[in-house]
Image (cartoon, rainbow, N blue to C red):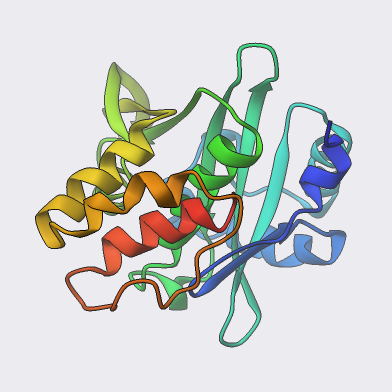
Length: 237
């Protein structure tokens, strides 16, 4: 059985991002990001305007926790730490967890880094951890994130009505989830619409124990979403 330390130390790579274990040296950037209202408007009130001492206390907690795994999100082209993502409330018996992500460096917004990180985490959760379900919460006004989650295969599970106060308005919180098996179904559905012949080979691909090279399919603008789903899954086999 793989230890929790080995899992936390896992480097997850997909296209333009790398996820690696968060380090103390990352905390200064986190504190800076969490003092920016444009960033924290999408996050829980508990993480707004944290001090260096509070962030260090949080780091020590999650670093030693068996129910949390936090990764720094790195842009591959320049090796810049641009945000964090993590798995929380990990239930090893029920095989469920909650997912959270934010990109603190606004220079990297709207460039698909969050999409690739989310796809990578989905593959990690289902293939490496062999979990059954991953959940997340997102505020109704965070339209960019909702679009990303839907693109990555998350579906609406519940709505917490008017439970979040922002800018003197109470907003809904959407509870979204992704169940094990949805990734395979999503790849089949997209592959059928883009490459009818591809679906004939998918059962073979999903039975492999090695990662498929990125040259298995010709990449086009239209097919990049499907192949990213597929390779995120296969690279973790």
